[in-house]
Image (cartoon, rainbow, N blue to C red; front, side, top):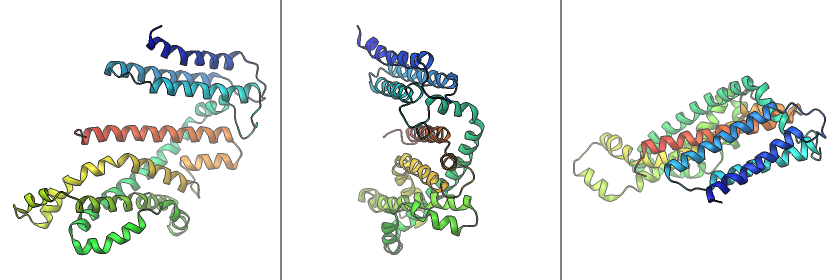
Length: 307
């Protein structure tokens, strides 16, 4: 049997076992939802897998990652189904059945989208405000020695401190939760980016600086025409980590008093012991993080194609 056929056969054997368990195995747990939403989710996952395989083949890539990942997903769903819906061996409240979790996507999709939109609004405002402010101030701090001597020790202390440490205080201090969340994200992005910008300016190759100084530019020209283009690739390269970290900080902040948002949705579901909704919210957060990472990767490839 060809290698490609064998790679496709193995995951689909697990897929058949999963579908058989969902459709034909007797349910040992009461209150299991209809299997329609779960199988719809299985179809979506299978289509994503086949799309990844086809794209890899068109590119001439022979990566085994899609096959390994889909086997992991099918085995995980199969074990989940067997230990909850079929045998009811797992805790009946803390470990919801997969049918109930996927039914949440069907029943709560409007609420989930509303909370995603709320979180994304706060994330984008805080992230870009912190990024732009850090780059601009970092350029001037890196270029002027006196300003660098003053700000660098402060940044060196603040950058390693997670912004979520300030969340309880900011939530109590700021007039609204939205403003507190934006400040948490802003601080989380600002200090590491500010410190990194200073380091990139200081670490600029002497040959570039000497060549630029031969033209006798003003400080303003040096900062905006020489230093800014130089540090942009490094800043763009770190966008993926900064964006995903900002989303995690936002979700943490939303656990502390929000009325909307993905973190609030999960926390509120746990408060009322609705663990099917909580697990669904956690899955949504994972999907959003993955999509953001994919978008940032595309942006990086467009902006710094030579890397």
